[in-house]
Image (tube, rainbow over all chains, first blue to last red; front, top):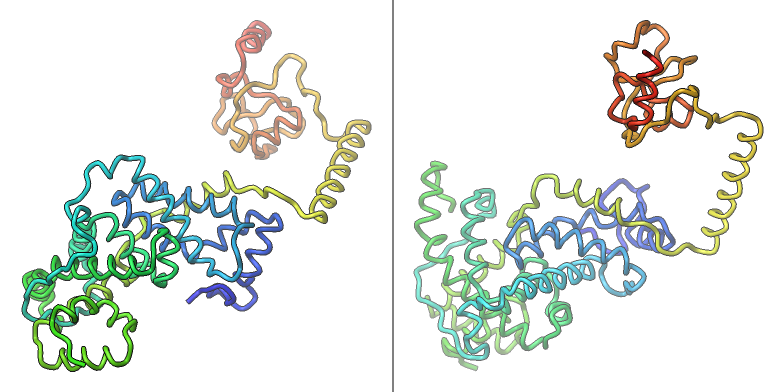
Length: 218
Length: 190
């Protein structure tokens, strides 16, 4: 895991992340790409999950990393650099979403009572899905569709917590909400996704895929 | 402690994240052993977390890294130097200025055009590869009919050729000459 005080996964003579940050701050701007390269995919993933459009996501990711460069002196070293970068990217994507009036077409889920009880649908077993399943484009598309159908407040929490692996506290800080809200929204997001995906991934989609591959995935 | 299904659903996400205390965890474990529906919810939620947490879930578009690097290169310039950095930059500026002055006074680093009958041209792409004769006056693109002997030709990039005083060929580089220069060249040749 390429995190703050460790190397960047390159040979030992490569500068550490801490050293790269120091040198970029001291004026070696051309080293900035080296610094962010391990995280560029995660940054794109975050902006794409929020904006749901490849072109907008790429532009937002680029803009976010430019902002990170311009404000790198504001980065506090007690935080993880990756978390700081993801926060900037998420803020950039959310700001663009607001500008695009996406809120005018508020998904139904956003109007639901956040604190209300949610009853999960009753399905038969959904057994463990092998991670190789994600190699299949159609599966990724189904997952993306399900994620896109969530209301913004649920999707934002889910993206930061379960896709970007931020802690509950980091997610709360990034979104400006309480940790209790993070937990409530995360619960709802996970349950809704489970309900959306279980009928397919627990049955027809997987059966079709396994038939194509000639072997059952479990 | 005994918990019912609704209590399990409320805490199931925290259970998965290890955010429930030991007593509640034990009660939920006990509940899962006897409740097929709640076990199905737990397994489904665990699948969701594992699938979406996989980095293969979203792929960056082809060329994303290259385009990012290019945009950073265009915009990411150092915004503030250290004192040492400023001193190095100042020293370098003095050296460069001194070099130019020395070159100018010694005739080295010609800035005069090699031909008094031409102008340096406008809009020549600086990185364009062009061809020159060491003792010639003009630069050409390969294939120009004014290149008669290729033996002594050498290639340089356009901005180097311009810096050395070469002028664009009136034949193959015509579009980079301004009107006045083109007319004058035409009348000269006539």
